Length: 158
Image 1 (cartoon, helix red, strand yellow):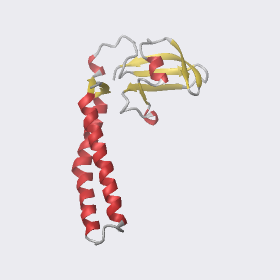
Image 2: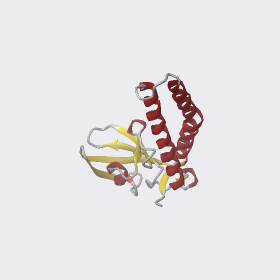
Image 3: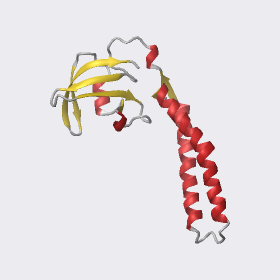
Image 4: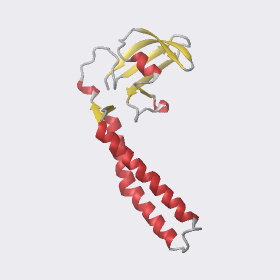
């Protein structure tokens, strides 16, 4: 079983989602199935089939989250001494040398990655390009959108 790195925050969010799916969503779906069943003939009952499909998706996600938690290698970045090196879980403050844009990313595991939240997967092109680098380094990263040049302004372990 391969261990997947995950941040403390990422693990907490998964646990919250699991509780929601089990304690709130599951009973709602069961009630919807019971309601739809009470309408009679199940062969042509769209509400019943929709509720059963939703139940299948919900149970699948519960299984998926349980698997992720079982394989989780929780990394608490706040317990490590910050020497300015980009590592899993660190927040990296960058300047795009091509556009002058300043941006920051937190390097996270696969199940936490969300570009809108500036959480990037450590195995993504940018994640791979940053891991192991240090504060003040100039970095050239090949991405699907072309080569990007960054300066690492700061690295925080938060």
